[in-house]
Image 1 (cartoon, one colour):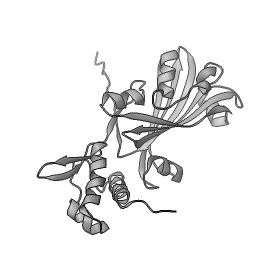
Image 2 (spheres, rainbow, N blue to C red):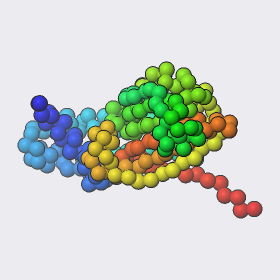
Image 3 (tube, one colour):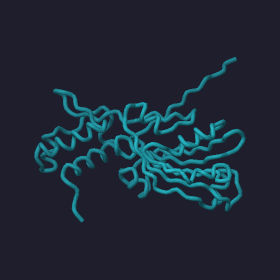
Image 4 (cartoon, rainbow, N blue to C red):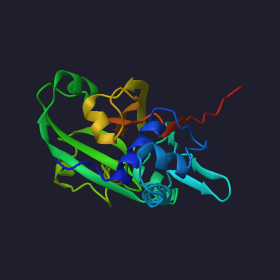
Length: 238
């Protein structure tokens, strides 16, 4: 098996350092000369690594000052149904998605409880990896009530369609329930998000209703360094 090109090794080092919090947002990374010495490569190789990460919005070059970690964290709105395609596109960045699984499964006891259906009922299931500027941002696992949304498993989720976008267009959300927690990445999640195993992750679980029918249960996991939560509430003091 061939090893990574030198510039890719440098990029992996920078991304891993960002995810571990060693290189924090808006702080300077080592200079090109320091990286040249650390990896024993030419300045052209280091420049290629940094240029690609800068084009993807991960790093920011400031003339006469150096290279800094860009502010990568997206605001994750928890008081409304959101479509990650819209969130990324509205920020001016490129969305892409990779459908990993899409099928009908039998509801386990846990999923049956979450969707308020009988254990063993048919459930639409999908697993999708979402990217921003070709960087893996979020791993989504979604379960839907197959009796209500039989066409869910007939879709093709990818660069132009997301599970959330499809459901919101055809089954408007009337009610939501969120659960948010911090967890350490498993080996599978770490490989999917290109982070180190054991890195802190943000996990959002959400159930949605259309009318009075519980229609969807989803788990979304992202690297803790790439998202932040946003909660906007109106307080009634009357």
